[in-house]
Length: 342
Length: 268
Image (tube, rainbow over all chains, first blue to last red; front, side):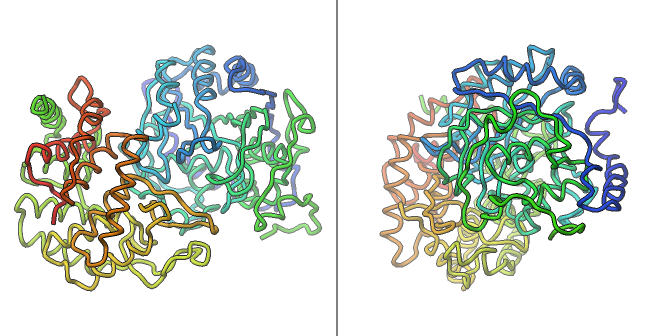
């Protein structure tokens, strides 16, 4: 145990397997369609028309709805995990630096004392180039925060509780394991392999490239959906802030078109946050396989189980284009059988 | 001026060394294969303790380092056989989409997965340095690299197309792949295009990693690299490092010392 009154995340994560397996077993027994078993979640949706707007205030307003997140933020190191993939001028590929800077300021304003921005870019190992070209370096420095390249961080093995990938364990960076709170700050994007890439998929970037390569191809071989679920159960991110001021439709996460969605989406149940963001894009989250998988692990997808703070979805809903392979995401969810869909 | 830059960098590297004579990516952390190999070559110190290797690219980088530092012939022989006998998956998971020649084998990051440009480049370079330039497995690796040249003349991390869309090249992979194609008949035009791309990108999107590898790549092909030196040295921090990272600092030393007439570790 740590010297404080609570176990550290490192201590918790090494013992969390039994609890998560127990949860998985209980949920599976009730079946997919028993949506009323999904824990009630709250997701904050706020309009934000520009990266020059009062983003820190908006994020702070969102954070104040989550007392347990505030407590964790004040108790140790907050790791902010943006989505930095590749740099392409004029494309909304990466989390905008203004959102990251605003998140630093917001967490600091609610009492967080140590804040680290951390990312392990999955495609390009030239992290310096990505930080400079995207202006993320400047944004982090302007808020006097530190940056950690998770691709190169010292790592420890963590046993996989659900082990959907059959990898048995994953190497996770010490920066992630030592955090009191990991915050996923992704971009609002469609994805050409996974359908959508939001706060859960963003956790791919916590896996160190020095151990798994660039790209982290072994995770694809074991199933993108399986990997997303395993990584999130291992990392246990506690909060998400989705940068939907500008999103990406079509051939995301790199080559899609920019959509000015004008929204920030936040919450402490990442599955519920992603489900809400998917609905904001005009898509049906029930059709996203990894969101369905998260139902067995405490996630919430059903809109009847999500309380929306701030704006109602209808006020911010967009009509994101998807590739033909994911046309099903455009279809309304109409469960006809009381069985788990494949 | 350059000698002072190198002195400060070497001082940083010496101070970053862990007690077991290996190096971490960042001082004070556990050691890694990549920083250990580059730092050992930059300081010309024997590779007495390599933390691994476990992955294919780590085998290759260790072999290259041992070749450059007159390492044990037995260890070099073992690593050579390991690399030559490595199996990878032939086809990409979405080969029809990627439009690659699925019959070609290179090397992957992690055993049992797809071949990628960077580990293939390291393996080809290391095996050539170990006297295996004519081995069919090396020749196949060269063909794989030639198969994956992007539309703009360099290399992405592995694919040149995804879902029919052309991918842009990246500088580190382009420099490594071009160097791996040394002495390959018929590759001159490909190398010329890669050098042209590196020269252009070094001016618009410079970084320590890209600049150091560009200098080394230009040096391998006897092209003047002095124009990139200033941009690299300007990035050195007060502590003598580049971004506080051992592998970037060591690569920068290896690149800058070639400008002063030192050996180029990637020259075959």
